[in-house]
Image (cartoon, rainbow, N blue to C red):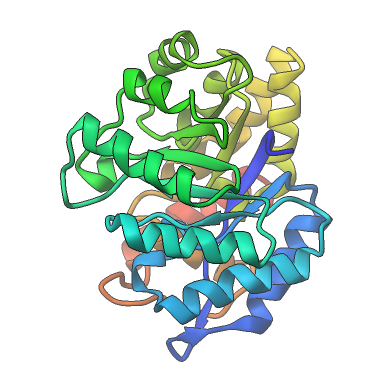
Length: 289
């Protein structure tokens, strides 16, 4: 259900409020372009700035508008175990197909703390759960041994690995149960991640190039190495330039440039500096989107 190109959806704002009209348009943009799955309320969705009511609304709308056409993996992580349980429970109640649960940021837990945190969430809420390891954001790194331990819990079904370290694919596979899913969380290395045996990607680039990211995943997972690498070459500038400033600054600017959303981002993030506008435009042209 969750394999292939899953988009880490932005949350569009207008006058600093959720722009529901633009959000619904984005959801259908992805359905029409063959995106494999929708991942609302994650890092790219500016979840740290959403109130609990907004967080739930973003997930609710995504499920309602996708209407079972593609899976919804709701971002429900928190650095508070109880809050993560609450958000994950809500996602389950409203019909999310799964939950993406980031490692606790700021707290700097031990590996045992990470294990117990995710174990408690999994035991409290039955919905399928994907671990999310992004040490560049969280100041903690979930090591392959810990992922392996957690893979023994039936409803923890996979991990989004965003270190960009391709050696993690084999390391995690060797520790985990058969069928445990591996998703890249780093667009720049996602093609090679898939060719090394990964199952899919949860992608920022997919926000602006959904069809090409879908085609890249299909090619890589079916062993069409040349085609996968050619598509990746076309997207390479996007993979890089969408991170010229902290995500999701550049991708929101790109979507506004494409006419899909209005200008809107929440402090402490700021709108993309004019210094980088032409670089992002060039990346969009190179990708032919």
